[in-house]
Image (cartoon, rainbow, N blue to C red; front, side, top):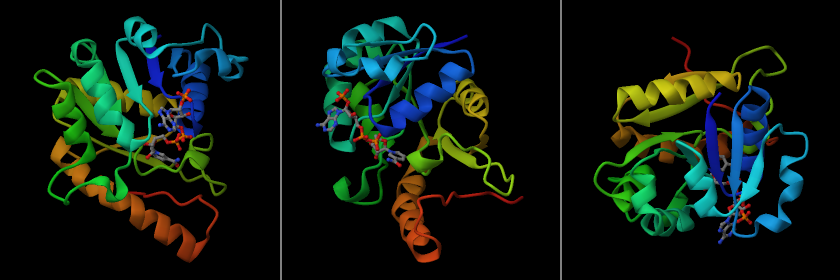
Length: 205
Ligand SMILES: NC(=O)c1ccc[n+]([C@@H]2O[C@H](COP(=O)([O-])OP(=O)(O)OC[C@H]3O[C@@H](n4cnc5c(N)ncnc54)[C@H](OP(=O)(O)O)[C@@H]3O)[C@@H](O)[C@H]2O)c1
């Protein structure tokens, strides 16, 4: 069992938290307004919803599920503790990036500072698909992830597997630049070919 802090309590946090709790992990949600978010933890054994600071204190793995514009300020504010954690960045910058030569996850890493352990993951998975890692046709959806530390990526791959998805290691964190670009593209493809927010990227070796 791993204790996982999910920062933010929105659609992705709820899906990931529910899935990991069902897989036996302990989930601590961090919220700006924890008293208003207690419904989140109904039925999740040992789960808690608390402040950002207390969630960070309780867990060795931190999943940042904030809107992209909030991520770097959050990382700077909690840099000292985040340097001691494995950080999974799921946020999508869309047009917030100045150009395509840097990834949102690289900005997250730099905001945490020296020693940051950041893995980019789940960026290309719609929240609607998090509870259904298998499609109606029985195909296993992929979660693409990127990071610079092999040990950290092994941990993230296990967490992805625990949710029922297939982890696909996309290489170093610089490749998160490509993942960032795949997000608006899959939104366009989903609308073009179905429009039900059910599309996923799938690697067919
Ligand atoms: N939606 C998707 O399909 C999807 C897929 C992959 C990745 N992502 C990325 O994952 C992140 C979360 O997406 P989401 O769809 O789960 O977002 P969401 O439903 O809007 O939830 C975001 C959460 O962040 C917290 N928050 C902190 N500051 C905020 C602010 N200024 N405005 C709004 N919320 C704020 C809120 O929790 P509290 O109120 O408890 O503080 C809120 O519930 C985003 O960066 C997104 O790009 C989304």
